[in-house]
Image (cartoon, rainbow, N blue to C red; front, side):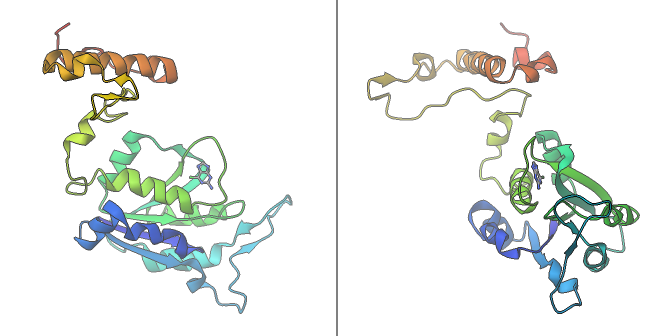
Amino acid sequence: MRVDIISIFPEYFSPLDLSLIGKARATGLLDLAVHDLRTWTHDVHRTVDDTPYGGGPGMVMRPEPWGEALDAILPAGPPARLVVPTPAGQPLRQALAHELAAESHLVFGCGRYEGIDQRVLDDAATRARVTEVSLGDYVLFGGEVAVLVILEAVTRLLPGVLGNADSLAEESHAHGLLEGPVYTKPPVWRDRGVPEILRSGDHGRIARWRRDEALLRTARRRPDMLATLSPMSWTNGTSRR
Ligand code: 6GU
C-alpha cells in the first residue's frame, strides 16, 4: 500500500518509524511519505492560513498551497482515496478501516485551525475519492494525531503486517461485539484466580464462555452495539447451545 501524508507538522509522524508500522515500511509492505504543506507556499512567511470569510473566530487554511500539494501528489491514473480527518467527518469504525485497507493508495490531508477551505475538497473530488473521517465526538487541534490512529487501524489489517492473523478474528469489533476479559500466567495472582473454565481444556465450553462474556460486556458498556447485531454473533456462528 502507498500512503502520502500532507501536514504542516511532519514531525508528528516520527512514530511511524517504530514498531509494526516501522517494520511494514522496512519490509516494503507499506510505502509511506510525509510532505510538508509549506513546500507549496511561495511567500516569505510560508503562509497557509487566513481569516474566515463571513467572520468568526480562528483561521482557515488557504486553498493555494493545498491545491498545489494535491496536484503534485494525487496520481494521474486511477484515482487515489483522499482522507481528510475532521470532527465533521464520517465516524471511524472497523468497517471503514477494512474499506481503507483494501485501497492501493491513500492520501491524508491534515487540516489545522478551523479547517481547510471547502473549495480544496470540492476540487480534489474531481480527481480523487474524498472521505472526511472523524475519530469521535470531540475536537482535536488538527488532523495529525487522527492520521496516526487511522493508519494504525488500517495497516494492521494489511496481509503480513500482523504476526498472527488469527488475532484479527478474535478481537473487539471483529463480530460486532466487544472482546471479553483475557488472562495469562500465573494461575493465581494476589489471591485472584483465573476463571476455571479457561484451564479446563474444553474448547467448546471455552468458546461459549468467551461469547457470553463478550455479550455481557457489550450489553453493559455498549448497548448501542447490540441493537444492530446480527444473530450470528449470538450463536458464535454455530447452532450449538
Ligand atoms: Cl479526525 N480531526 C480533528 N481535528 N478533530 C477530531 C477528529 C479529527 N475526530 C474527532 N475530533
